[in-house]
Image 1 (cartoon, rainbow, N blue to C red):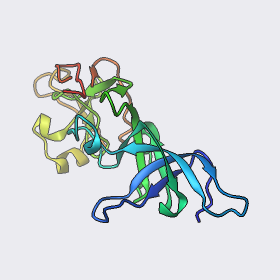
Image 2 (image 1 turned 135 degrees about the horizontal axis):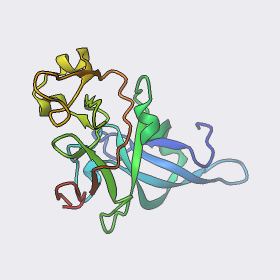
Image 3 (image 1 turned 180 degrees about the horizontal axis):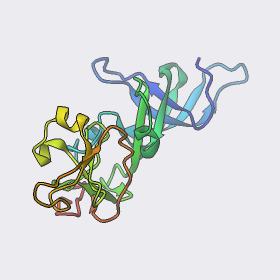
Length: 205
């Protein structure tokens, strides 16, 4: 068995082989005096499609929610360890591996509510940040924009050095800022509560 300690995140074999591995956080480990029949107490992570609201446009492909669903499983169902990063830590990874995930919300499986229930939104489309999507940052207001929302191709976005959004630019003096660093600095100017209302999005509706 993989050497485990409480707090480790693991991939667990699903009963349906067609489904992706489950992800859980190990809470405690127990076994008999001979170290056999080892069982693990886990707290499950849910994928967005497993939540009441389903997968949304802003959910990353490696995004998970830490649920309030606890369980006891045989250690034999563990396929191996994985890493569930904080959202900030995930965005700073140089490369994302198969066993890298991130979590920015806790999820109540009975009510479908999230904690925190508010998240910053960006761009003209006023959506929460999806780390899978390319974005460029305005040097004026510091907001981030999807290339398609500002009539720019991804190829153009990758080449620009400076960028000023329509509100911050004047006439032909548009400048463009480097989008490569992607150091996603959170701005508190626009916030969403996870109901689809203009700057306040609710993940529930």
